[in-house]
Image (cartoon, rainbow, N blue to C red; front, top):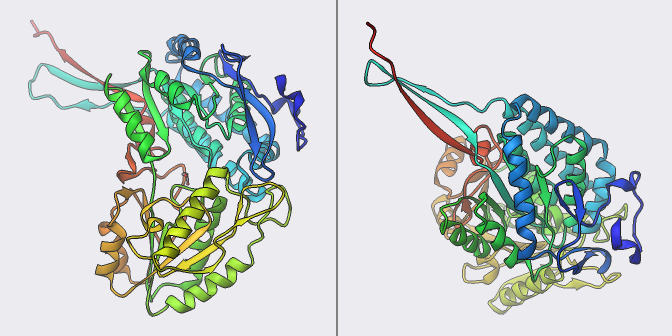
Length: 501
Ligand SMILES: O=CCCC(=O)O
């Protein structure tokens, strides 16, 4: 593992060859031109356990040239061969599930069971996109003129760049790279500074799966150099597409930069997702689904429940059950067996959660439990927190919380709650629970979000189009046709037949 010997590795892998800490460019492990490195920290202890190259704008061209060179050949490989490489990659990831889960625990902080969950969810993408590779099709059109023939073909766009977050590093890479590689594009990934190692492991396995050199390059960097590196990638002439997952603020910057060259962009941005639980809901179902959704990765998912609206008839009963279940949560290091909720991934996450709780308290909200940082072995732990009396003017109702803080709001009518739920600039996901089929249908149509969970808190899947509306972004990832289409161009052919003699 390169220069990382100066750190004590806090875990052992069955297959130590999986562990790499240098950037991966054209099949080689590379330092940055500056030689600078940054540390990767275990959020469960706050201790660094390895380091990675701090790449900057000067490192971009080499990686892009490699990806472009590779693209010239990769675009001509048959879709069946691309599918076979994706299948091989998929099976290598599954074979190394235990080790990848270990790395994930020490990068993100999530408990081991959740790390397995992420890997199983993520291999859905490699599996799915392997199937999609052979189903890329053009169309034949009926022309208005008798001697004319009109048809389209789909072709890969070229080199794509993926700017990815730290909360689901495996899922976010495989969702983007799976679609790109199936389409015949090559990809450069810039992982988040918190989670480069899992991404480098995936690149190592992609290489072993037979993808040609340059098909999947990875450039790591720290927080300071992230804007510079991301901009250089997004502006490079040979990069034809940028896929970004992260905050709305940064997503707007990426869109602006890409608009200079009219580059294609997919933006999967922030959420402020409402949950609506009606008096006639199956409470067991709503409890189970929303509890898992909210506390998954200590509340750090873009599609998590940010505002939980419960109708007045069941409000007290629902809250009582929620509090009782919340008390059972065991906060600890993700590698400990008894842990059911890990730390948040960054120290910044703790500061934000504390500020949001403080603002809510000042404006009259009641904290039923939690609200504080937990001091434990130097990790970034936060108490599972339950707050009621939340109102629309509180920051906690307006911003993405990204911490295990549950905010409950009481409502009376469907009309009132739909209005409140939609009163946000975001539109990623919404969830509703009711046994009234007509109402369920109305909610599906009236809630303003790209994904609506109807009596479910889990609508993420390889076969389902994933993406938001409003300021939660545009473009779809995963799902039939739409996800691969983000990496394709459509070319129209018009052909005139010679008149017969
Ligand atoms: O945090 C965003 C992604 C979560 C998911 O894919 O379900």
